[in-house]
Length: 317
Image (cartoon, one colour):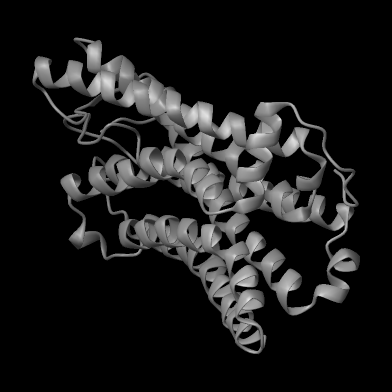
């Protein structure tokens, strides 16, 4: 058992996705390309939103936060993966592991809350259009964005502090490609009952509560859309929500499956598969979903790339 200052000198070994040298080289190329696509796609989304005044609205203000968040999230995980694909010794220090865990837990929590805020924005825009510009003011949007970031970092801090205090003994081998909280806690040589309770509370507050708010928002949104007499009006109203609904399904679905199952059902293989989905694939797909399913973003992409003049926007950040 490791205690005191000895714990801070620990090193963990990350098993990663494969132990075959040939496979690891192929995975290195694959994940490097995915990382570059993720960075390029999210940078492009943020650039388009910044340069086109017609996208200076609350909806796209929160989307720019989501794009920045996805870039940070993948940067927390993928560079370590790429290094380990080519390294003989796939170690990570205890401090580095805890830092990676804290940042990834924080950013994941921020995303769950941010998606709920984006659902509220769509609720106000569709169900209360006359009050939209009054309620969704610049100040209010900034306050909600700050609240998302603070709540996420607090969640990450609480779960990481508990993990820091666990005693680790025996083999320090993490059966994962990163310092994922469930995989790390599997190495503890004491009861993780308190950790399970902390994770359950965090799951309810950071994951299930925002998900419930998203569901409630869309119940009202769908009810309002169905009352629109024009088929074209219904199509236009719902088209502003389809991209967000797709991202919500991908993000909440994988996270609920990963974190809200009983600990006895945890499988390292399933854990790595699910983690790959929400750490790597979803951040890469988000820019594609928002650009292909959103006419305003597609139009802005064409105009920004073509260098055409833009109209003045009413709402600016």
